[in-house]
Image 1 (cartoon, rainbow, N blue to C red):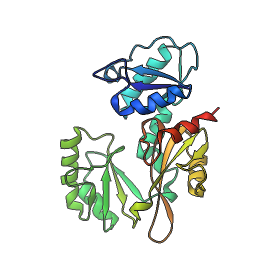
Image 2 (tube, rainbow, N blue to C red):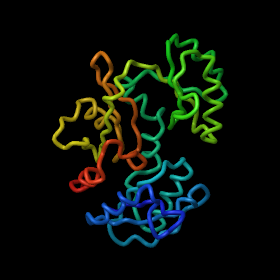
Image 3 (tube, helix red, strand yellow):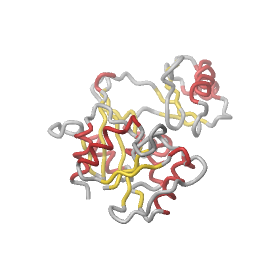
Image 4 (cartoon, one colour):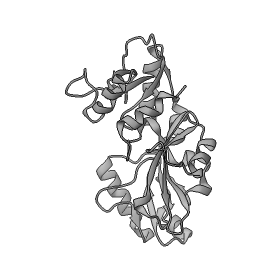
Amino acid sequence: MRFVYPQSFLNPRQPDEIFQDEATALSKAGHIVTLIDSEKLPTEPATLKSITSEKTVVYRGWMLSPPEYKNFVLSIENADGLPLTTTEKYLSTHYLPNWYQIISDLTPETIVLSLDSDWNSELKKMGWSKFFVKDYVKSLKTSVGSLIESPEDIQTVVTEMKKYRGTIEGGLCIRRVENFLVETEQRYFVLKGQPHCVNPTDKIPDIVFECAKRINSQFFSVDVIHRADGQLRIVEIGDGQVSDLVGWSVQRFIDIWETAT
């Protein structure tokens, strides 16, 4: 496979420092690694050398906004390559509202609100005891955090999201809080319809296979957690190209590509 990583700001001939170990290991395993100037993607496609072999391209790097990802796809296509994941498929797993309806029975109840909604009033209608607040992509992991018990507190969370992140992507997703056992959360990757887990000898839960059947994407991540009553639940789905290797070794990640066709 051909993998594209963002280049380092300090040394453009090297992958961004965060991704260097992964990129180096993939290259040693026989895959082709190409670098892209991701600083250009907010406004225009980046220039890449013509792709003459291993034309299917997998992005691995920072999360990209819809305009940035469209420019990434154009960058690949202009170099005669083919993106593994189209913009439409990228957003199908990157944006929570796009995957929620498909697996709503497997994940906490969620409402989606626009930025001009009366958030306080909408939350009061739900009658929930606790709320988890995030935008289409991320939660607030600093300051006051994303968990609130009173609808009136949502304004504080939104203000802090804007302060620490600069923008709110898409709108607000309000999730009902369930009694999860935090230490049980595990990440799975689904590649071309086949689920993979961090330990190849472990049994993959049925709920992950169900996601693999329902979600129409070539490469995505699935985060699964145990609820206190023993029920398995999906807490997050994400595009695999921008998903961290949470709990995974670099070598295990490389292994799942060895049998991908």
